[in-house]
Structures are given as C-alpha cells and as structure tokens.
Amino acid sequence: MEYRQLGRTGISVSAICLGTMTWGKQNTEAEGHQQMDYALDRGINFFDTAEMYAVPPSAETFGKTEEIIGTWFRNRGTRDKVVLATKVVGPGAHFSYIRDGKTRLDRENIVPALEDSLRRLQTDYVDLYQLHWPDRWTNMFGRLGYTHDPDAPITPPEETLDVLAELVRAGKVRHVGLSNDTPWGMMRFLHLAETRDQPRMVSIQNPYSLLNRTFEVGLAECAIREDCGLLAYSPLAGGALSGKYLGGARPPGARMTLFEHFSRYNKPLGIEATGRYVALAREHGLDPAQMALAFVTSRPFVTANIIGATTMEQLRANIASVDTPLSEAVLAGIEAIHGEIPNPCP
Image (cartoon, rainbow, N blue to C red; front, side):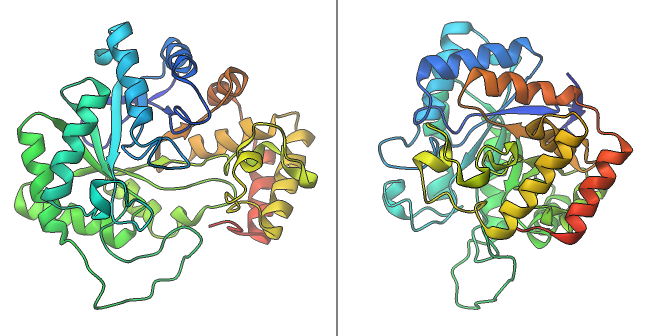
C-alpha cells in the first residue's frame, strides 16, 4: 500500500481510504466488520465516515455506520491503528431528524454533533473532523454555476473555526477538513487559520471521477499549493464506471437498482462516456473499475481515494486498483474521451 501525507500534519494515510456509507443500510454490522478487517490487513489505515451515514440517509439509519465502526474498535482493539475521519452535517432541508432540522456549522450544532459521534464511535477523539457541506448557498450536486443570494443565511467561517479550534485544544479533534466546498471556501478557511492562529484545513473531500473532473478547475491548484489535498469520493461514479449499468442493466442489489433516485450518473452523456471508458479499459486488458480508480489515485492533488463496496469481491478488486498500472496509451485515451465528453455528470 502507498502512503501519503495528510496536509501538513505529519500523519501518513493510505492512498486508498475505506469508505463506509453503506454499512447499516446495504451492509450489516458483521459485513462492515469483515470489510474493516480485510482493509486493515491490506494496509489501509484511513477510514472515512459521517454522522449522517448510512446512505441513503434516513432517521432510521442515522448514526448506524459510526456505531458499526465503534463496535469494531471495541471488539478488535484497533483504534490506534486507524486514522479516523468523520463529518458534521451542514445545512440541509433533508435532515429534519438531526438536531430538529436546524443543522448549521455553529457551536450549537458542532459541539453536540461531535460528542454524539465520539459516543457512537466508542473513542475519545477523531483524527479528522470534516464540515460535510458549506454553511452557505453555493454550487452543489449537479449544479456548477454560482448564483449569489445576499439574503441567504450563512454562519461566518470565523465562528465555525472558533468552535473547531476549541475542540482541537480539548484533544477531541486532531485535525479539521472540508467537504463539498469551493476554491473560495478553502482559501477563506486557510486565510483565517493563518491570520488568527487557528487550525488549518488539511484536506477537502469532494467528488472526483472520470465522469466528474470539475475539481481540476480551480481547486486542484489550491490543493497542491496549499497542501490541502483531495479526499476523492464517488471515484466510480456510484459504481457506474464498472460498466455494470450499461445497456440499461440493473443488477440485483446494486445501488441504482435499489435506489432509483440515484440518477446523478445516469444521464445520456454520462452513459456514453462510461461506455467509452469501459471499452478503453478492455482494449488494454484492464478491469474498467480498476482503471477508473487507478486514474483517481494517480492524480497529484489527491491525498486519498475513498473506495466503497457492498461485497467482499468488490472490496478486494477496489483495493487492488492501487497496483493497476496506467500506460501512456491508456492515459491518452482517457484524455481523448474527456476532451470530447468533459464532465458529463458534475
């Protein structure tokens, strides 16, 4: 396994990070424990979760994933072997069951959110505490343009960072990071950290895949120059880049089969691009999913590639992608497809 520096922390994390969002919904506790056992044995020391998991989110599954990780820590005694990342929910109309639906990135929310996460995770600290969404109106899933609303509510980043700084000083959080944020958001938090002597954001967790390379516009340079690397999520575009949904197929138990509203990667241009990426992989004797994952892991602005799996077969193949070589011909083929069908599923 390859290891990389997490920002300027001096912490080495595996280039493959174990994503956990299906545990408690598509996967049982026993299956989650089995995945963590295998991942740790394969050298993965970086696990990512969130208070709102499992996904799709619901009142019934809220916090279940963290609970599964917590029982694994308790049963295996492995807390010190894992760099653990979790997240606090930002504003969202879909979470009426979380803190009475008044989720903001302020003291009233962040402090109890962390305490509840620590209880579920059965630990007294997290290594990386991430802001799941910006506490402001900005571009989100499927919408790249920014429309400014001067009346939209916002928790000032200064206020959010003040709370995070207190949690770091208390030893409950080692480092802090962003998720689903923009170049302005990253640079604003970094500026505040430097000018106010507060914790520096060490990472940003945004979507990145062959079907969505929008991170490369603006954020990639920030990530490299500021040592605030990408934790890439959805690197297989919800499993689409494996090719399993091509031709309208809906395999039993697959995410798009179970949850039809996950249509973000099921757009005509996305399907066309996926077909071409799958064909390119097969032309070069590669597994399509492993080629897609290897591309993400190879990018210079990526700290870790967050993989997820619902079966052990998928997990083994996804982890093995770290050893998948990408020739110049493969990389040229990827760029040719991207040039003709850029970012079909942002």
